[in-house]
Amino acid sequence: MALKRGVYLICGLCSLALGLLGIPLPILPTVPFILLAAFCFARSSDSLYQWLMEHPWFSDALKHWESERAIRKGLKRKAYIVSGLSFALSIAIVPLVWVKFMLVFFAIALGVYLRNIPELED
Image 1 (cartoon, rainbow, N blue to C red):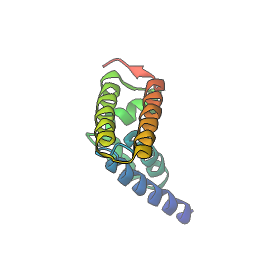
Image 2: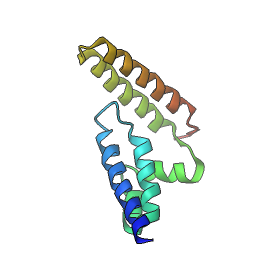
Image 3: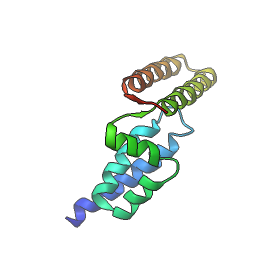
Image 4: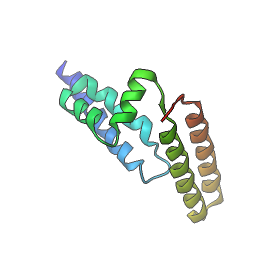
């Protein structure tokens, strides 16, 4: 049992780190990694799970996701704006055409993913 908790803890910490990196980097999505971190912490560390669920950046979204599998309309709008701007900047900066196409593909995939998430009124 201790080994299983340790694996969940390591996965949760890695997911949290990737989620935090995803805030400024367009290729890494923040929300799925934070959700995965919450899932792993719930199975490995009560204190880290509570910390994440009460964190000012993530608590509101995590609680809505946990209870209703939806996010607030304003948060979704922010996700569209920040993702769009960071992808646009990345596409403008990258010199390789195949990388530009890959970024466009990821941007479209992220947009479709975000569109399919149910919305809550603000």
